[in-house]
Length: 197
Image (cartoon, rainbow, N blue to C red; front, side):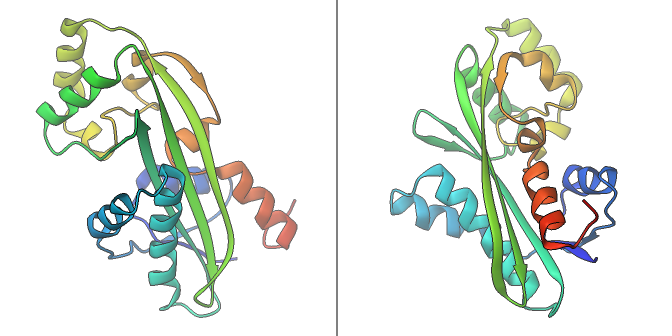
């Protein structure tokens, strides 16, 4: 089975490879900011935003690859009615982490599988993460050690790295937190007969 990931995410590719798949990476060129802004203007829920962005990516790449499975993914961080984007600067990351400190936010990871430019399967995984009330001095050291790598992640942290130290409690699937509801995807591919299962 050839699975094309409509994403440049290294961690998503690594998760699939670790699970025994050999994905091909082809990032989708879509205007995420415009799509997100339009959905927010319509008061779309975070779940719908993640799903729509994942679908847009899968649809775009699938149109170029008839007969191939294409996986689109997106992740949204939602906190008190606000959708966080990837921090553009270390100052943005500091501000996001200060807002999230001592509170609980949601990560929603959407995956949409396309075949022949049509949706075949979709899933949105939801996790709830509670940050510790870490000190300002720890926050400054964390930013010094981890910027610019954390700029790739909404909220300014990577759970698979030092970012795990920011948290007091996590409810949800680890793979979903990393950006891909992997177990649900693998179960579907096994049921479909695309992989042994």
